[in-house]
Image: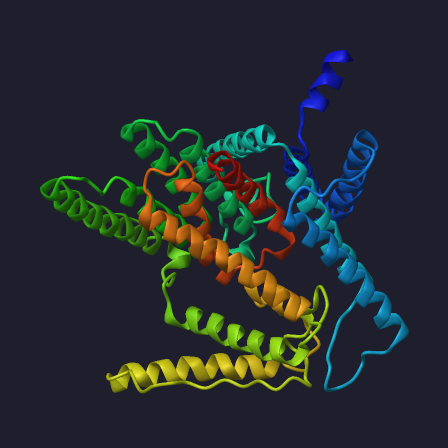
Amino acid sequence: MVERSLFIKKISGAQALVIIFICTSLFTKFNLPFHFFFIFILIFSFICLLFQLKKRNGLKISSRIEFWHYLLIFYLISIFIFNKLVDFNYDFFPHFWNGQSVLVLISVLMADIVVLKTSSNDILKTLRFLKYISYIMILESFFSIIIPNNFNIFVSDFEAGYRFTSILTPGYVYTGLFLILGYTSFLHLNSSASKRRIFLIFLCFCFALIQTKDRTSILTFMILNAFVLYKSANSRSITMSIFKKTSFFLKVILMFAVLYFSLMNFGDRKNFMSLTSSLDRYVIFVRGLNVTEAVLPIGGGPGSQSRLMTYSKIPFNQSLTSANIEDKNELTNIERDLNYSKNYMRKKIGSNKTLSPHNTYLDFTISLGLVGILIVIFILYIQLRSLGSLLVNQISQKYFLNAMFVSIFIIFIYTSFITSIWIFLIYYRATQIYDSQNK
């Protein structure tokens, strides 16, 4: 009993959040909704902060970003209460300030605060924990190709295309995300590993990611590895520098080619680089911008990013710029596919159905308006700063963390992760460790 209690005490706040996420994902295999996760983390975060309040005789705010989290929680509660007192329901001011959705976002913000209050040593332990989780997922990916689909618990259903989906995550998109984060953890924690070991690990993660058949995750992984290769492409000697840079470009081209042809051989994903799919996402993105403009300045409320995309009172404004397309046949095909996507979107508008913008940046801007735009600016600032650091300093202790922050731009553009931002905050905290050490 004593050993068990000691084990529980050793689990940090950030690590406990990951465990809750995994346990809730396992519950979904028994047809329990994933929404329980937000209830669990809200209760856990509240208890965790209460213990810190009692232990320190006061809840000390450790950073500016933590202060802004408290301010954002206050903002959400204030707008929600004001919405109940004053009816926002005007045609010119669409909104969806729903109590349940507000509570979900507050639970995520509380989880963020728990991560921010996790000690530096425990953050590194959490990165190690995520690395081991990704190793389990790689093992699952091997079973996913052996077991028949009818009995395979490691793949999605027929409608999702029988993609590799870990039992530790609620879907194949999260499986790809956790694999990328685990790979980043390995690179960061094993920066002195031999090139042979790194290459072997790369192959294992590459195999698992290809099994997800998720283009967004795979493209993110490719960009991350381009920076991994770039790290060894510099030399003080001019001759060696030219040789290494040439080798770098050849390796990147080879990596992209191998992954491209690997995906092309999947029967159900032969069109994985199809233009039509990209145009669909483009049209949805433009629609998201229309909604963002309509809900300014306070936003449509948490959850509105899915519900207001088909709101009939918001006009759909989208046009095709064809001045730079010289091939008339190509232009005709693009216009045909784009018009198809536009008509599909127009038919959805007024259907009162949900449609995700598939974009983390739009999630924030539609939900929170000007406040959401400020959050997006902060995220982009971190990514641009990380890119600058990668290009200037290849020997930085947080090189691979910066590479991850740059590469996840792709994931944020094509996938909605507003309720999982606490996961990325763990890695942001890891970068802060080295910033504080340098100071």
